[in-house]
Length: 108
Image 1 (cartoon, rainbow, N blue to C red):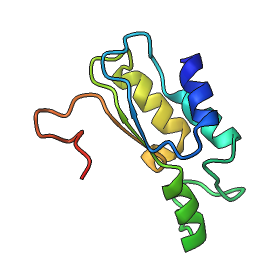
Image 2 (spheres, rainbow, N blue to C red):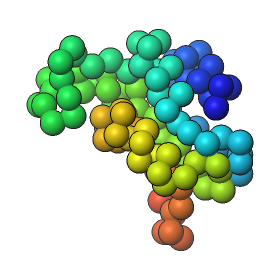
Image 3 (tube, rainbow, N blue to C red):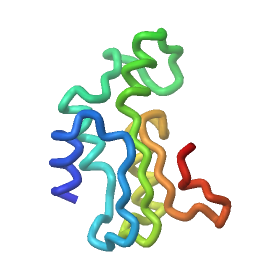
Image 4 (cartoon, rainbow, N blue to C red):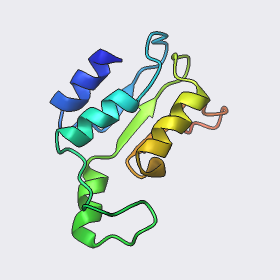
């Protein structure tokens, strides 16, 4: 988890992260906190997920979005739900714990 936080802070153009099979990775909160504190993801003060955003702000959010493949990792559904609750309900994070056999983890 600490290594992920360091990666989140240091790799500003990181868009896709594959932690499949990494059982010691138990949470994405640290990496998301690091990305926000490093300014990779920016939100206007006082805004929340329900507010309408202008185009410039949405461009910053989209640029900072992280797609994570986490099947067979230590990340649980509860851990992911907590991270999503803390970080704007998936607006800046998409995490696939189990694609359900439909190829959801394949980016096109």
